[in-house]
Image (cartoon, rainbow, N blue to C red):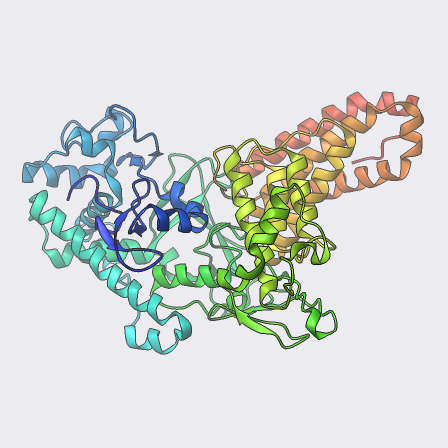
Amino acid sequence: MSSNSSANGEDAGPCAVCGAQGRACARCRVDFYCGKDHQLQDWPRHKLGCSFLEPFTMCVGCGSESRDYLAACVAQCKSCGWPVCSAACGLREEHQAECGAFQRAGFKLKAGDANRPGAARLDALTALRVGLAFADTKVGASLRRLPSRLPDLQAALKDAGVHRQAVEDSHKAFAGRLRRASQWLRDEARVHCLSAEELERGLAVALLNGMEGASGSEFYLIGGVFAGLSLVGHSCLPTAWRYACRRDSKDMQLVASRDVAKGERLTTSFIRDPLSASLGCDTQRRRAVLADMTGRVCRCALCEDPTQRGLYLNSWRCACWQHHGCHELVLVLEGGRWRCDGCGCEGATSAQDGERFLGGLLGAMVSGRVGGGQAWLPEGAQLDGATGQGLPLLLEEYFGDLVAARTTEVAQWEEFIADALPPNGPLHPTHHLVLRAKRQILCPDKDGVEADITNLKLRMPKTIDEARRYSSHGRDLLRAVEVLRPGVNHYRTDLLRQLVVLDVMSVTLFAALPPWQCTARRAEWTTIVKEFAEDLSTVKKASVSPFEVETVHSLISQKNMLLAALNPVLKKDTQELQVI
Protein backbone atom coordinates (compact mmCIF):
# COMPACT_ATOMS: atom_id res chain seq x y z
CA MET A 1 0.00 0.00 0.00
CA SER A 2 1.40 3.39 -0.94
CA SER A 3 2.10 5.95 1.76
CA ASN A 4 -0.47 8.38 0.36
CA SER A 5 -3.44 6.04 0.49
CA SER A 6 -6.48 7.42 2.27
CA ALA A 7 -7.49 6.34 5.76
CA ASN A 8 -9.98 3.88 4.33
CA GLY A 9 -7.43 2.48 1.90
CA GLU A 10 -8.56 4.27 -1.27
CA ASP A 11 -7.19 7.26 -3.21
CA ALA A 12 -10.48 7.84 -5.02
CA GLY A 13 -14.07 7.65 -3.92
CA PRO A 14 -17.49 9.32 -4.10
CA CYS A 15 -17.53 13.10 -3.66
CA ALA A 16 -18.92 14.06 -0.23
CA VAL A 17 -21.17 16.66 -1.91
CA CYS A 18 -22.45 15.21 -5.18
CA GLY A 19 -21.38 11.55 -5.15
CA ALA A 20 -19.29 11.78 -8.33
CA GLN A 21 -15.84 10.21 -8.42
CA GLY A 22 -13.36 12.35 -6.48
CA ARG A 23 -9.92 12.43 -4.89
CA ALA A 24 -9.15 12.20 -1.17
CA CYS A 25 -8.59 15.33 0.94
CA ALA A 26 -4.83 15.91 0.88
CA ARG A 27 -4.73 16.68 4.60
CA CYS A 28 -6.76 13.93 6.28
CA ARG A 29 -7.44 11.65 3.28
CA VAL A 30 -10.85 10.66 4.65
CA ASP A 31 -13.42 12.53 2.52
CA PHE A 32 -13.35 12.73 -1.29
CA TYR A 33 -14.12 15.66 -3.59
CA CYS A 34 -14.67 15.95 -7.33
CA GLY A 35 -13.13 19.42 -7.38
CA LYS A 36 -12.21 22.54 -5.42
CA ASP A 37 -15.73 24.00 -5.56
CA HIS A 38 -17.33 21.11 -3.70
CA GLN A 39 -14.39 20.88 -1.30
CA LEU A 40 -14.91 24.53 -0.35
CA GLN A 41 -18.67 24.02 -0.11
CA ASP A 42 -18.24 21.12 2.32
CA TRP A 43 -15.48 22.78 4.37
CA PRO A 44 -17.76 23.99 7.23
CA ARG A 45 -18.60 20.35 8.00
CA HIS A 46 -15.32 18.74 6.98
CA LYS A 47 -13.06 21.09 8.96
CA LEU A 48 -14.53 19.88 12.28
CA GLY A 49 -12.70 16.60 11.97
CA CYS A 50 -10.04 17.18 9.33
CA SER A 51 -7.22 18.20 11.66
CA PHE A 52 -7.97 15.37 14.10
CA LEU A 53 -7.63 12.81 11.29
CA GLU A 54 -4.52 14.21 9.67
CA PRO A 55 -1.62 11.75 9.31
CA PHE A 56 0.33 11.05 12.46
CA THR A 57 3.21 8.95 13.71
CA MET A 58 2.77 6.57 16.63
CA CYS A 59 5.49 4.87 18.63
CA VAL A 60 4.83 1.13 18.38
CA GLY A 61 6.53 0.61 21.74
CA CYS A 62 4.83 3.01 24.17
CA GLY A 63 1.96 4.20 21.96
CA SER A 64 2.80 7.92 22.11
CA GLU A 65 1.47 9.92 19.16
CA SER A 66 3.14 12.69 17.18
CA ARG A 67 1.44 14.78 14.51
CA ASP A 68 4.72 16.36 13.42
CA TYR A 69 4.63 14.20 10.32
CA LEU A 70 6.50 16.81 8.25
CA ALA A 71 9.67 16.25 10.24
CA ALA A 72 12.61 14.99 8.22
CA CYS A 73 12.67 11.66 10.01
CA VAL A 74 11.59 9.79 13.12
CA ALA A 75 13.34 7.18 15.19
CA GLN A 76 12.91 3.65 13.88
CA CYS A 77 13.17 0.23 15.44
CA LYS A 78 16.56 -1.05 14.29
CA SER A 79 15.17 -4.49 13.56
CA CYS A 80 11.86 -3.85 11.74
CA GLY A 81 11.85 -0.13 10.91
CA TRP A 82 8.55 0.77 12.61
CA PRO A 83 8.45 4.20 14.34
CA VAL A 84 9.54 4.40 17.98
CA CYS A 85 10.31 7.21 20.42
CA SER A 86 13.78 5.86 21.09
CA ALA A 87 15.87 2.71 20.92
CA ALA A 88 14.49 1.74 24.34
CA CYS A 89 10.93 1.74 22.99
CA GLY A 90 12.02 -0.61 20.22
CA LEU A 91 12.99 -3.12 22.91
CA ARG A 92 9.73 -2.94 24.87
CA GLU A 93 7.90 -6.20 25.49
CA GLU A 94 4.77 -5.02 23.66
CA HIS A 95 6.66 -4.77 20.37
CA GLN A 96 8.75 -7.93 20.41
CA ALA A 97 6.30 -10.45 18.92
CA GLU A 98 5.49 -8.50 15.74
CA CYS A 99 9.09 -7.30 15.45
CA GLY A 100 10.23 -10.92 15.32
CA ALA A 101 7.56 -11.75 12.73
CA PHE A 102 8.71 -8.91 10.46
CA GLN A 103 12.34 -9.99 10.84
CA ARG A 104 11.52 -13.59 9.92
CA ALA A 105 9.66 -12.30 6.86
CA GLY A 106 12.66 -10.18 5.87
CA PHE A 107 10.56 -6.98 5.96
CA LYS A 108 11.72 -3.58 7.20
CA LEU A 109 9.59 -0.44 6.97
CA LYS A 110 11.21 2.32 4.93
CA ALA A 111 12.14 5.58 6.61
CA GLY A 112 9.58 7.60 4.65
CA ASP A 113 6.79 5.19 5.55
CA ALA A 114 7.81 5.15 9.22
CA ASN A 115 7.57 8.94 9.23
CA ARG A 116 3.96 8.71 8.07
CA PRO A 117 2.67 5.16 8.56
CA GLY A 118 -1.01 6.05 8.19
CA ALA A 119 -4.08 4.41 9.65
CA ALA A 120 -4.05 1.48 7.19
CA ARG A 121 -0.55 0.29 8.14
CA LEU A 122 -1.33 0.75 11.84
CA ASP A 123 -4.40 -1.45 11.29
CA ALA A 124 -2.09 -4.09 9.84
CA LEU A 125 0.26 -3.81 12.81
CA THR A 126 -2.70 -4.16 15.20
CA ALA A 127 -3.96 -7.23 13.32
CA LEU A 128 -0.55 -8.87 13.63
CA ARG A 129 -0.02 -7.96 17.29
CA VAL A 130 -3.42 -9.27 18.42
CA GLY A 131 -3.29 -12.25 16.06
CA LEU A 132 0.04 -13.34 17.56
CA ALA A 133 -1.32 -12.80 21.08
CA PHE A 134 -4.00 -15.46 20.47
CA ALA A 135 -1.25 -18.04 21.05
CA ASP A 136 0.07 -16.35 24.21
CA THR A 137 -0.26 -18.57 27.27
CA LYS A 138 -1.26 -15.65 29.53
CA VAL A 139 -3.83 -13.73 27.49
CA GLY A 140 -4.60 -15.93 24.50
CA ALA A 141 -7.57 -17.76 26.00
CA SER A 142 -9.24 -14.49 27.06
CA LEU A 143 -8.66 -12.89 23.66
CA ARG A 144 -10.12 -15.84 21.77
CA ARG A 145 -13.37 -15.55 23.74
CA LEU A 146 -13.93 -11.91 22.74
CA PRO A 147 -16.43 -10.97 20.00
CA SER A 148 -14.89 -10.68 16.54
CA ARG A 149 -17.96 -9.97 14.41
CA LEU A 150 -20.36 -7.08 14.03
CA PRO A 151 -24.01 -7.72 14.93
CA ASP A 152 -26.12 -9.49 12.32
CA LEU A 153 -26.60 -7.10 9.41
CA GLN A 154 -30.24 -7.94 8.73
CA ALA A 155 -31.20 -7.50 12.39
CA ALA A 156 -29.28 -4.22 12.55
CA LEU A 157 -30.95 -2.94 9.36
CA LYS A 158 -34.39 -3.81 10.72
CA ASP A 159 -33.77 -1.48 13.68
CA ALA A 160 -31.82 1.17 11.76
CA GLY A 161 -34.69 3.37 10.59
CA VAL A 162 -33.34 6.33 8.62
CA HIS A 163 -29.78 5.19 9.35
CA ARG A 164 -30.03 2.04 7.21
CA GLN A 165 -27.43 3.28 4.75
CA ALA A 166 -24.97 4.18 7.52
CA VAL A 167 -25.35 0.72 9.08
CA GLU A 168 -24.94 -1.05 5.75
CA ASP A 169 -21.91 1.08 4.87
CA SER A 170 -20.33 0.37 8.27
CA HIS A 171 -20.55 -3.40 7.73
CA LYS A 172 -18.97 -3.07 4.29
CA ALA A 173 -16.24 -0.73 5.57
CA PHE A 174 -15.49 -3.04 8.51
CA ALA A 175 -15.05 -6.05 6.23
CA GLY A 176 -12.91 -4.01 3.84
CA ARG A 177 -10.71 -2.75 6.66
CA LEU A 178 -10.00 -6.30 7.84
CA ARG A 179 -9.29 -7.48 4.31
CA ARG A 180 -6.88 -4.63 3.49
CA ALA A 181 -4.91 -5.17 6.71
CA SER A 182 -4.40 -8.89 6.06
CA GLN A 183 -3.58 -8.27 2.38
CA TRP A 184 -0.92 -5.71 3.23
CA LEU A 185 0.70 -8.02 5.76
CA ARG A 186 0.72 -11.04 3.47
CA ASP A 187 1.37 -9.37 0.09
CA GLU A 188 3.67 -6.44 0.93
CA ALA A 189 5.23 -7.39 4.27
CA ARG A 190 5.28 -11.10 3.31
CA VAL A 191 4.22 -12.17 6.81
CA HIS A 192 2.89 -15.74 6.54
CA CYS A 193 3.15 -16.95 10.13
CA LEU A 194 -0.62 -16.38 10.48
CA SER A 195 -3.41 -17.06 8.03
CA ALA A 196 -5.53 -14.27 6.55
CA GLU A 197 -8.43 -15.41 8.75
CA GLU A 198 -6.31 -15.18 11.91
CA LEU A 199 -5.07 -11.71 10.99
CA GLU A 200 -8.57 -10.45 10.22
CA ARG A 201 -9.85 -11.90 13.46
CA GLY A 202 -7.03 -10.14 15.36
CA LEU A 203 -7.96 -6.74 13.95
CA ALA A 204 -11.69 -7.40 14.48
CA VAL A 205 -11.11 -8.20 18.15
CA ALA A 206 -9.13 -4.97 18.57
CA LEU A 207 -11.70 -2.81 16.77
CA LEU A 208 -14.72 -4.26 18.56
CA ASN A 209 -13.22 -4.58 22.05
CA GLY A 210 -10.45 -2.00 22.21
CA MET A 211 -10.76 0.79 24.76
CA GLU A 212 -8.83 3.93 25.55
CA GLY A 213 -8.83 5.88 28.77
CA ALA A 214 -7.51 9.24 29.90
CA SER A 215 -5.48 9.95 32.99
CA GLY A 216 -8.11 12.48 33.97
CA SER A 217 -5.99 15.29 32.59
CA GLU A 218 -5.94 14.20 28.93
CA PHE A 219 -2.16 14.58 29.15
CA TYR A 220 -1.85 10.98 28.09
CA LEU A 221 -4.04 8.11 27.02
CA ILE A 222 -3.64 4.39 27.13
CA GLY A 223 -5.41 2.06 24.77
CA GLY A 224 -5.67 -1.66 24.35
CA VAL A 225 -7.89 -4.72 24.45
CA PHE A 226 -9.12 -5.35 27.99
CA ALA A 227 -11.01 -8.60 28.46
CA GLY A 228 -13.06 -7.25 31.37
CA LEU A 229 -13.89 -3.91 29.77
CA SER A 230 -15.10 -5.66 26.63
CA LEU A 231 -18.16 -6.74 28.62
CA VAL A 232 -19.14 -3.10 29.15
CA GLY A 233 -21.74 -1.78 26.73
CA HIS A 234 -22.12 1.66 25.16
CA SER A 235 -24.50 4.41 26.17
CA CYS A 236 -24.37 8.14 25.53
CA LEU A 237 -25.58 8.36 29.17
CA PRO A 238 -23.02 5.95 30.65
CA THR A 239 -23.17 4.40 34.10
CA ALA A 240 -19.37 4.23 34.34
CA TRP A 241 -16.22 6.00 33.18
CA ARG A 242 -12.77 4.78 32.15
CA TYR A 243 -9.56 6.10 33.68
CA ALA A 244 -5.98 5.27 32.83
CA CYS A 245 -4.05 4.78 36.05
CA ARG A 246 -0.65 6.37 35.46
CA ARG A 247 1.89 6.87 32.73
CA ASP A 248 3.73 3.64 31.88
CA SER A 249 0.93 1.66 33.51
CA LYS A 250 -1.10 -0.85 31.51
CA ASP A 251 -3.96 -0.73 34.00
CA MET A 252 -7.35 0.81 33.34
CA GLN A 253 -9.87 1.64 36.04
CA LEU A 254 -13.62 1.46 35.52
CA VAL A 255 -15.37 3.82 37.94
CA ALA A 256 -19.13 3.91 38.44
CA SER A 257 -20.48 7.35 37.53
CA ARG A 258 -23.44 6.81 39.84
CA ASP A 259 -25.00 4.09 41.97
CA VAL A 260 -25.67 1.07 39.75
CA ALA A 261 -28.55 -1.23 40.60
CA LYS A 262 -28.06 -4.97 40.89
CA GLY A 263 -28.54 -6.54 37.47
CA GLU A 264 -28.13 -3.22 35.62
CA ARG A 265 -25.59 -3.38 32.81
CA LEU A 266 -22.47 -1.28 33.10
CA THR A 267 -22.05 1.10 30.18
CA THR A 268 -19.46 3.60 29.07
CA SER A 269 -19.51 6.12 26.24
CA PHE A 270 -17.59 5.71 23.00
CA ILE A 271 -18.05 9.46 22.40
CA ARG A 272 -15.50 11.16 24.60
CA ASP A 273 -16.62 14.79 24.70
CA PRO A 274 -20.32 15.41 25.51
CA LEU A 275 -20.10 18.86 23.91
CA SER A 276 -18.02 17.76 20.94
CA ALA A 277 -18.43 20.11 18.01
CA SER A 278 -18.78 17.26 15.54
CA LEU A 279 -20.34 14.46 17.62
CA GLY A 280 -21.53 15.00 21.15
CA CYS A 281 -24.08 17.77 20.68
CA ASP A 282 -25.59 16.59 17.39
CA THR A 283 -27.78 13.52 17.87
CA GLN A 284 -28.08 12.65 14.18
CA ARG A 285 -24.35 12.96 13.53
CA ARG A 286 -23.51 11.08 16.73
CA ARG A 287 -25.83 8.25 15.76
CA ALA A 288 -24.30 8.05 12.29
CA VAL A 289 -20.77 7.86 13.75
CA LEU A 290 -21.79 5.25 16.31
CA ALA A 291 -23.46 3.22 13.56
CA ASP A 292 -20.19 3.38 11.67
CA MET A 293 -18.27 2.26 14.78
CA THR A 294 -20.58 -0.46 16.06
CA GLY A 295 -22.69 -1.54 13.09
CA ARG A 296 -25.95 -0.65 14.84
CA VAL A 297 -27.98 2.46 15.66
CA CYS A 298 -27.67 3.74 19.22
CA ARG A 299 -31.01 3.59 21.04
CA CYS A 300 -29.85 4.96 24.39
CA ALA A 301 -32.05 7.34 26.40
CA LEU A 302 -30.17 10.43 25.19
CA CYS A 303 -30.33 9.54 21.50
CA GLU A 304 -34.04 8.69 21.75
CA ASP A 305 -34.90 12.01 23.44
CA PRO A 306 -35.48 14.80 20.87
CA THR A 307 -35.13 17.41 23.65
CA GLN A 308 -31.70 16.03 24.65
CA ARG A 309 -32.72 15.86 28.30
CA GLY A 310 -34.24 19.32 28.15
CA LEU A 311 -31.13 21.07 26.80
CA TYR A 312 -32.43 21.38 23.20
CA LEU A 313 -28.83 21.55 21.98
CA ASN A 314 -29.79 21.70 18.29
CA SER A 315 -33.13 23.50 18.50
CA TRP A 316 -33.94 27.07 17.56
CA ARG A 317 -36.92 29.25 18.36
CA CYS A 318 -39.64 29.01 15.78
CA ALA A 319 -40.14 32.51 14.42
CA CYS A 320 -43.33 31.70 12.56
CA TRP A 321 -45.00 35.06 12.26
CA GLN A 322 -47.68 33.49 10.07
CA HIS A 323 -49.11 31.75 13.15
CA HIS A 324 -49.60 34.46 15.78
CA GLY A 325 -45.94 35.08 16.53
CA CYS A 326 -44.98 31.55 17.57
CA HIS A 327 -41.60 31.46 19.32
CA GLU A 328 -41.53 27.88 20.64
CA LEU A 329 -38.37 25.74 20.49
CA VAL A 330 -38.57 23.33 17.58
CA LEU A 331 -37.79 19.63 18.04
CA VAL A 332 -35.08 18.16 15.81
CA LEU A 333 -36.33 14.69 14.90
CA GLU A 334 -34.76 11.51 13.59
CA GLY A 335 -34.26 11.49 9.87
CA GLY A 336 -33.02 15.05 9.51
CA ARG A 337 -36.40 16.72 10.14
CA TRP A 338 -37.75 19.20 12.66
CA ARG A 339 -41.18 20.07 14.03
CA CYS A 340 -42.64 22.96 16.02
CA ASP A 341 -45.36 21.75 18.39
CA GLY A 342 -46.47 25.34 18.90
CA CYS A 343 -47.67 26.12 15.38
CA GLY A 344 -47.35 22.78 13.58
CA CYS A 345 -44.64 23.88 11.14
CA GLU A 346 -42.16 21.22 10.10
CA GLY A 347 -39.36 20.77 7.60
CA ALA A 348 -35.98 19.23 6.81
CA THR A 349 -32.81 20.24 8.64
CA SER A 350 -30.81 21.20 5.59
CA ALA A 351 -29.11 24.32 4.36
CA GLN A 352 -31.73 24.69 1.62
CA ASP A 353 -34.35 25.62 4.25
CA GLY A 354 -32.65 28.95 4.82
CA GLU A 355 -31.59 29.86 1.30
CA ARG A 356 -34.30 32.49 0.84
CA PHE A 357 -32.83 34.82 3.41
CA LEU A 358 -29.28 33.68 4.13
CA GLY A 359 -27.99 36.42 1.85
CA GLY A 360 -29.70 39.08 3.92
CA LEU A 361 -28.41 37.58 7.15
CA LEU A 362 -24.88 37.41 5.80
CA GLY A 363 -24.98 41.09 4.97
CA ALA A 364 -26.19 41.89 8.48
CA MET A 365 -23.45 39.76 10.03
CA VAL A 366 -20.70 41.26 7.89
CA SER A 367 -21.87 44.75 8.84
CA GLY A 368 -20.96 43.95 12.43
CA ARG A 369 -24.17 42.87 14.11
CA VAL A 370 -27.29 40.89 13.34
CA GLY A 371 -30.21 43.12 14.22
CA GLY A 372 -33.49 41.92 15.67
CA GLY A 373 -36.79 41.39 13.90
CA GLN A 374 -37.35 41.67 10.17
CA ALA A 375 -34.07 43.53 9.68
CA TRP A 376 -32.63 40.07 9.00
CA LEU A 377 -34.84 39.44 6.01
CA PRO A 378 -34.37 40.28 2.35
CA GLU A 379 -36.92 42.78 1.11
CA GLY A 380 -40.38 41.25 0.79
CA ALA A 381 -39.46 37.95 2.47
CA GLN A 382 -41.31 36.43 5.40
CA LEU A 383 -39.73 34.43 8.20
CA ASP A 384 -41.56 31.20 8.95
CA GLY A 385 -40.64 28.01 10.77
CA ALA A 386 -38.75 26.63 7.77
CA THR A 387 -36.61 29.63 6.93
CA GLY A 388 -36.10 30.16 10.66
CA GLN A 389 -33.34 27.60 10.49
CA GLY A 390 -31.26 29.85 8.30
CA LEU A 391 -29.86 31.95 11.13
CA PRO A 392 -28.59 28.98 13.19
CA LEU A 393 -26.91 27.71 10.03
CA LEU A 394 -25.27 31.06 9.43
CA LEU A 395 -24.25 31.41 13.07
CA GLU A 396 -22.62 27.97 12.92
CA GLU A 397 -20.58 29.04 9.89
CA TYR A 398 -19.60 32.28 11.62
CA PHE A 399 -18.67 30.32 14.77
CA GLY A 400 -16.30 28.15 12.74
CA ASP A 401 -14.67 31.24 11.25
CA LEU A 402 -14.09 32.70 14.73
CA VAL A 403 -12.44 29.46 15.92
CA ALA A 404 -10.31 29.22 12.79
CA ALA A 405 -9.12 32.82 13.25
CA ARG A 406 -7.15 31.70 16.38
CA THR A 407 -6.95 35.29 17.68
CA THR A 408 -10.63 35.89 18.41
CA GLU A 409 -11.04 38.13 21.46
CA VAL A 410 -13.51 37.73 24.32
CA ALA A 411 -15.52 40.71 23.08
CA GLN A 412 -16.08 39.00 19.73
CA TRP A 413 -17.37 35.84 21.42
CA GLU A 414 -19.64 37.88 23.69
CA GLU A 415 -20.97 39.70 20.64
CA PHE A 416 -21.55 36.35 18.96
CA ILE A 417 -23.63 35.20 21.96
CA ALA A 418 -25.60 38.46 21.92
CA ASP A 419 -26.30 37.98 18.20
CA ALA A 420 -27.47 34.42 18.79
CA LEU A 421 -29.84 35.00 21.73
CA PRO A 422 -33.17 36.90 21.77
CA PRO A 423 -34.06 39.57 20.89
CA ASN A 424 -31.37 39.45 18.20
CA GLY A 425 -31.31 35.75 17.37
CA PRO A 426 -33.48 32.63 17.61
CA LEU A 427 -31.18 30.50 19.77
CA HIS A 428 -31.51 29.83 23.50
CA PRO A 429 -29.02 29.68 26.41
CA THR A 430 -28.31 25.94 26.10
CA HIS A 431 -28.02 25.75 22.31
CA HIS A 432 -24.73 24.05 21.48
CA LEU A 433 -23.36 27.13 19.66
CA VAL A 434 -23.95 29.31 22.73
CA LEU A 435 -22.33 26.76 25.05
CA ARG A 436 -19.38 26.29 22.72
CA ALA A 437 -18.89 30.06 22.48
CA LYS A 438 -18.80 30.25 26.28
CA ARG A 439 -16.21 27.50 26.29
CA GLN A 440 -14.09 29.54 23.89
CA ILE A 441 -14.30 32.46 26.32
CA LEU A 442 -13.28 30.23 29.21
CA CYS A 443 -10.61 28.12 27.48
CA PRO A 444 -9.75 29.33 23.97
CA ASP A 445 -8.47 26.99 21.27
CA LYS A 446 -5.25 28.24 19.75
CA ASP A 447 -4.80 25.84 16.83
CA GLY A 448 -7.90 26.87 14.90
CA VAL A 449 -9.84 23.67 15.61
CA GLU A 450 -12.06 22.86 18.57
CA ALA A 451 -10.62 20.26 20.92
CA ASP A 452 -12.16 18.39 23.86
CA ILE A 453 -13.46 20.52 26.70
CA THR A 454 -10.73 19.19 28.98
CA ASN A 455 -7.03 19.96 29.09
CA LEU A 456 -7.47 23.47 27.71
CA LYS A 457 -5.56 26.44 29.08
CA LEU A 458 -7.82 28.64 31.16
CA ARG A 459 -8.06 32.27 30.06
CA MET A 460 -6.84 34.30 33.04
CA PRO A 461 -9.09 37.24 34.00
CA LYS A 462 -7.50 40.64 34.60
CA THR A 463 -10.31 42.24 36.60
CA ILE A 464 -12.85 41.05 39.14
CA ASP A 465 -15.65 41.66 36.64
CA GLU A 466 -13.92 39.47 34.04
CA ALA A 467 -13.40 36.76 36.64
CA ARG A 468 -17.09 36.77 37.53
CA ARG A 469 -18.18 36.60 33.87
CA TYR A 470 -15.79 33.73 33.14
CA SER A 471 -17.03 31.92 36.23
CA SER A 472 -20.64 32.38 35.09
CA HIS A 473 -19.83 30.88 31.68
CA GLY A 474 -18.03 27.98 33.36
CA ARG A 475 -21.05 27.22 35.55
CA ASP A 476 -23.32 27.21 32.49
CA LEU A 477 -21.01 24.64 30.88
CA LEU A 478 -20.89 22.59 34.07
CA ARG A 479 -24.69 22.45 34.28
CA ALA A 480 -24.86 21.19 30.68
CA VAL A 481 -22.16 18.56 31.26
CA GLU A 482 -23.94 17.37 34.42
CA VAL A 483 -27.05 16.75 32.30
CA LEU A 484 -25.19 15.01 29.46
CA ARG A 485 -22.63 13.17 31.63
CA PRO A 486 -24.18 12.89 35.10
CA GLY A 487 -22.05 11.66 37.97
CA VAL A 488 -18.32 10.95 38.03
CA ASN A 489 -16.30 11.71 34.88
CA HIS A 490 -13.23 13.75 34.12
CA TYR A 491 -15.11 16.32 32.00
CA ARG A 492 -17.10 17.39 35.04
CA THR A 493 -14.03 17.24 37.28
CA ASP A 494 -11.95 19.32 34.88
CA LEU A 495 -14.59 22.05 34.73
CA LEU A 496 -14.79 22.05 38.52
CA ARG A 497 -11.01 22.49 38.74
CA GLN A 498 -11.20 25.42 36.35
CA LEU A 499 -13.94 26.98 38.46
CA VAL A 500 -11.79 26.64 41.60
CA VAL A 501 -8.95 28.45 39.82
CA LEU A 502 -11.39 31.22 38.86
CA ASP A 503 -12.57 31.33 42.48
CA VAL A 504 -8.97 31.89 43.59
CA MET A 505 -8.61 34.66 41.01
CA SER A 506 -11.90 36.22 42.11
CA VAL A 507 -10.82 36.31 45.76
CA THR A 508 -7.43 37.77 44.85
CA LEU A 509 -8.82 40.42 42.50
CA PHE A 510 -11.59 41.37 44.92
CA ALA A 511 -9.10 41.84 47.75
CA ALA A 512 -7.16 44.24 45.52
CA LEU A 513 -10.15 46.57 45.13
CA PRO A 514 -10.21 49.89 47.00
CA PRO A 515 -11.90 49.60 50.43
CA TRP A 516 -14.95 51.60 49.37
CA GLN A 517 -15.59 49.18 46.47
CA CYS A 518 -15.21 46.19 48.79
CA THR A 519 -17.86 47.66 51.05
CA ALA A 520 -20.20 48.49 48.16
CA ARG A 521 -19.89 44.97 46.76
CA ARG A 522 -20.15 43.08 50.04
CA ALA A 523 -23.01 40.85 48.80
CA GLU A 524 -20.90 39.83 45.80
CA TRP A 525 -18.04 38.93 48.15
CA THR A 526 -20.33 36.64 50.13
CA THR A 527 -21.30 34.87 46.89
CA ILE A 528 -17.65 34.47 45.84
CA VAL A 529 -16.65 32.92 49.16
CA LYS A 530 -19.67 30.59 49.16
CA GLU A 531 -18.95 29.41 45.60
CA PHE A 532 -15.27 28.90 46.46
CA ALA A 533 -16.14 26.64 49.40
CA GLU A 534 -18.75 24.66 47.44
CA ASP A 535 -16.54 24.21 44.36
CA LEU A 536 -13.57 23.01 46.40
CA SER A 537 -15.71 20.55 48.36
CA THR A 538 -17.35 19.21 45.18
CA VAL A 539 -14.11 18.77 43.24
CA LYS A 540 -12.58 16.84 46.17
CA LYS A 541 -15.47 14.36 46.06
CA ALA A 542 -15.43 14.11 42.25
CA SER A 543 -11.69 13.48 41.84
CA VAL A 544 -10.88 9.83 41.18
CA SER A 545 -7.77 9.38 39.05
CA PRO A 546 -4.30 9.85 40.60
CA PHE A 547 -3.79 13.00 38.53
CA GLU A 548 -7.09 14.48 39.72
CA VAL A 549 -6.32 13.71 43.37
CA GLU A 550 -2.85 15.26 43.08
CA THR A 551 -4.31 18.36 41.44
CA VAL A 552 -6.89 18.79 44.21
CA HIS A 553 -4.15 18.57 46.85
CA SER A 554 -2.27 21.30 44.96
CA LEU A 555 -5.40 23.48 44.84
CA ILE A 556 -5.92 23.04 48.59
CA SER A 557 -2.31 24.10 49.24
CA GLN A 558 -2.79 27.18 47.05
CA LYS A 559 -6.02 27.97 48.88
CA ASN A 560 -4.33 27.78 52.28
CA MET A 561 -1.50 30.09 51.19
CA LEU A 562 -4.00 32.51 49.67
CA LEU A 563 -6.11 32.69 52.83
CA ALA A 564 -3.07 33.15 55.04
CA ALA A 565 -1.95 36.09 52.91
CA LEU A 566 -5.36 37.74 52.52
CA ASN A 567 -6.86 37.36 56.00
CA PRO A 568 -4.88 40.21 57.63
CA VAL A 569 -5.57 42.57 54.70
CA LEU A 570 -9.29 41.89 54.60
CA LYS A 571 -9.75 42.09 58.37
CA LYS A 572 -8.03 45.48 58.41
CA ASP A 573 -10.62 46.74 55.93
CA THR A 574 -13.47 45.11 57.92
CA GLN A 575 -14.08 42.72 55.02
CA GLU A 576 -13.63 39.47 56.95
CA LEU A 577 -12.91 36.29 55.04
CA GLN A 578 -15.22 33.46 55.93
CA VAL A 579 -13.74 30.02 56.51
CA ILE A 580 -13.39 28.12 53.23
